[in-house]
Length: 428
Ligand code: SF4
Image (cartoon, rainbow, N blue to C red; front, side, top):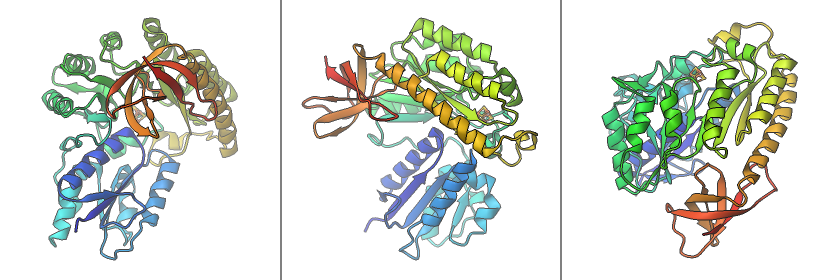
């Protein structure tokens, strides 16, 4: 009988990519992948520690593991495995705590376990990029890891301590990986990493890499996931017009106040952020710019908060992901005076979420009457769903629609009953 493996992934897209690659490896070696709530032989929790809430969720999943099989194996990896290693190693229910550097070797560790070999995770192969390509058809969007780690050291962020310093993957490996995915039928390639704009391998920077990828042949489109506003150059901004490039960037703002950005030690100003957005929107007014905002960073005054609200209204974001600042041990912001009361953070979050929702609906409404090319991800009761090039969810009806194919639609309507309204369209 096939052994069963269950994964739970928390946090960023990079974690999701790494889980996908590990699941593929387990599946190709005869394992059945089951949902985390089911009984399994192996449980892998790919944890996150970016906020206090992420720690809380990661701990909850560790406690929830459904251990109906007494000899099941529990592996905890991801950023919490780096940040709270000692605490996790002292938990008797966890068999292995695997730091990010060794995450790509989780499968070998489990195989060795079943052969009766005792390997300490620290002796596993340490390679940030040796994940195998995700299997054909595993996800409609195929993520490609180009970079890991970060040298920016924003004062609130624990990531450089848990993911390490910035490392870029060889250009030839990335191109080979993408060519394989395209020949396997991938239609959308998503570049992922911790701080991808800082990609730098020998003479190739991020702008050059994107240019090389866009020159590849094949019926695919390229999506840049989350990017900091400080790494890339003008060449990249010009490439955003390329027909294979999707008009969407998740450009992390964090605050609309110059003073708070400086205290966060972000590498740009509000003025520079606005210049980037203006340049992009001048080229394409419908370009989707989504962002993150941290609420209640130490010293955030009412004026600072209002500046964030104002900027969100002004820049017409397609989506704003807000989260409340939480202290991360060992960061510089931990030692800052004037930490903000929790109830003020909650109040500000509510206000900002309301503004973000209005801005998002207005942005999505502007697509009514426009065309979008949807990559279909699922079909339910004759209704196909997927994302358009601007990364907005879209649904439509049609016969003989296939998953992982592009369809051109005219947008006719928008659902109005949720925080995440879906566009509706008709085939052209
Ligand atoms: S750029 Fe700043 S927020 Fe992003 S990972 Fe690096 S230190 Fe963290």
